[in-house]
Image 1 (tube, rainbow, N blue to C red):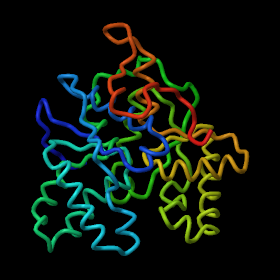
Image 2: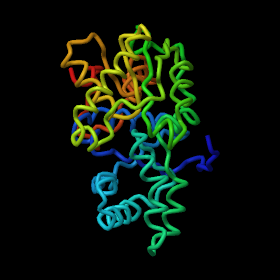
Image 3: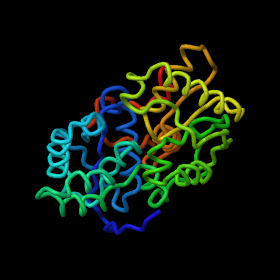
Image 4: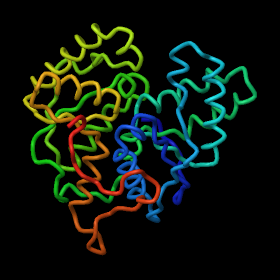
Amino acid sequence: MTAKKVNASPKNAVFATCLADTLRPQVVEATCNLVKHCSADNLTPILPSEQTCCGQPLYNSGDRNGAIKQAMRVIDLFGEFDAIVVPSGSCAGMLKWHYPSLLQDTPYAQKAKIFKEKIWELTEFLAKFLTKLSAKKPLAIKSALTWHDSCSCLRENNSESCARALLKRRGFTLRESTNREVCCGFGGKFSIRHSAISTSMADDKIKSLQASGASIVAGADLGCLLHLAGRARRRALPLSFFHIAELLVEQINNSKSEKGSPASSVKSQTKTSKQTLVPIGA
């Protein structure tokens, strides 16, 4: 993991992502609470209400001009922050690795380079800064779980070891699956344009996950988790899927805070105000 400088009392922001905002808003709330928990001053991160898409669908569809306009807008909105935490390897990869090349021939070229250094994929951020949560705290789940490596976390952000370290450090029992480097078949529009191939890849991935012996699957990319959960549900398979932010924040909520109440702090900024550990797609 590349070392980054973050101030002792940074002005942090959370990039919500489209999927989390519309389909799993509790991931956004969980992320905000975890980032707050990482702050030395217990500062709640900013969740700009004006934020929209990172531009990845435009970029992947070949609409370069549309993607450039969107990238400029995101930089204008988030550029003032010290750190931008993203609960998605895919979106983090777009913001960090693709913006600089996308904007290299525009007036935003230098801004994109500076912006890149502020981007943190969630597990990367938590592995470095989440020090207050002890493994002695009550676990959100007691069963063993297996980890799904998204392509973006594995190949763009190189953060696959961060998630494993976090889970093990917090007391979760982790069982590795086979063929973990293989794509699950989501790939955004790929799953729509090539649905038969995508479905076959999902079945192969689910077979590998089941071979781990775990009935719970955790991951850091909601797109992959929604894709796999949907396929598992259609096949009536006994697998439950969770975003890692949900598991970690539930561990905090299961323990007593200094005031004896759950560590919830962003009710006014997110669409949901109650953390409930319900599997994705249930």
